[in-house]
Image (cartoon, rainbow, N blue to C red):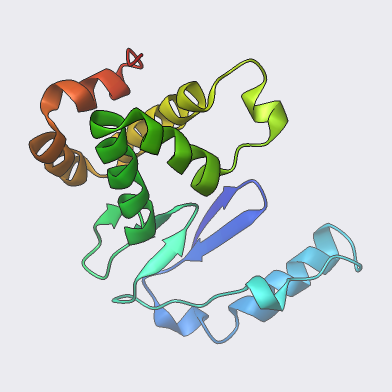
Length: 156
């Protein structure tokens, strides 16, 4: 078994299917013994996935062929933001206001434009780390220079 944790998200992986039937009971027993009898596995957040299924976790997807990418919804958002950034400042700002809905503390002394650029930089940097093929597609579609500017955070 392989144990992976990010904050309060736990992933137990195995190549051997024989563990599936007992894994929830084993984890629950461990939580009771090692942490507290009051700590329970949240059944509504527990998922059992099998090889060959699409898995969504921590903001990205693992496709049945093993490729790691971002969700199609995130791809649509990134492409909409790139399109508006390149073609129409007003629509870019409007998109940021309506779709990203930054809270006042997130804006601080930033404009919606600056917040959107910062958000898009972060998204593209994350995509670049996990899906080089998709970044290549974006480079072809929107231009290498524009994507590189976002990756280097040199966009104004």
